[in-house]
Image 1 (cartoon, rainbow, N blue to C red):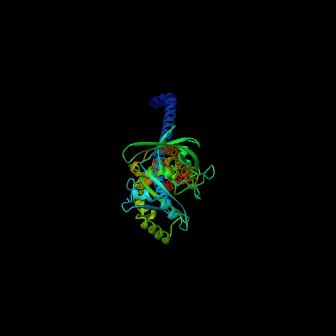
Image 2 (image 1 turned 120 degrees about the horizontal axis):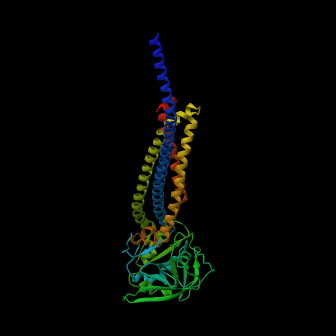
Image 3 (image 1 turned 45 degrees about the vertical axis):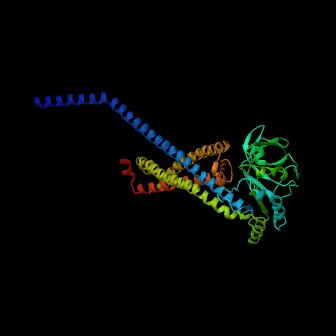
Length: 437
């Protein structure tokens, strides 16, 4: 009896002591649970934030690269097509047999071309379907003004009235006299000139003596929609240009403009006959254009390859990051499913998240790409030897917003596809299993 009473007292004391220990440790346990919950929450938020930041950065960088490459490739393609458009406007280039197809240059100071240029113009303009004929200096002449200096091409017209339907002169029809010139609108704006300003044509004579002549601008040609007219041209009277055509290191050509975009075989035969009678062979721009196209295709293919490579890298990165985003949130997916959300709603949630991040980064990168392209175009980067390929002396990149729209669609498409693929792999996981994981 006494032993039983003693055991009861010992047990009561032990239980009392255990309860006091538990009572004393309870606040500590609750605090640790809160800290663990807080750490998990912070870790989840940090992981989620870092994941989306990483996803945004990848989208941002890769989209910039893709847009730059696509626009670069598109710009080269536009230059190539622009050359094609110019080729098929019916322009026929009259040259001697020593003509260089690729560069489009004649021998310096070709005496035959200089001697008979007036006869050529008269002979070609008599033909049916011809709207005009003009001699043009391709290289070797520098045009300056008091405000700026710029390398230019010179178109040499006759001293007759500028009557060609393609020439829309701002001040009406203009008859050029000695010492007067007509300038293209593009060149006028780029050189910050107005009608009445003076420009100076600098050249080197056949004897190697520098020469300079002053011209007053009396008219402006609106060349905005002209395919055959290069962006920067100045036209001076024929009489003033006879000496210019014989200057050292000056390349000349004679262009015949036709009503039809593509000269017929009969016209080409006639043009060649006229040239043959003048001891000069006529080459259609179609033949010359093939050389230009082949030269452009190499650069176009190289940049397009880089664009495709960037696209493949983007697809892989998008798939990898969206997969990581979904797999790292399996427990949250299980919780949402256990609370009654359907798989479809969970899928829509992830698609919206990834799509929003992708499109936002695509928009930011598109803005930077546009600003970068505008900055590159405004710097007037010389093309050098490639000027003949691109049809312009300076690098000019035109922004095609359809390309940016295409890139945005591509980013959206791959975001959705990668999310669908990753989500399909975890669709079979039950809510309880997902929560346990």
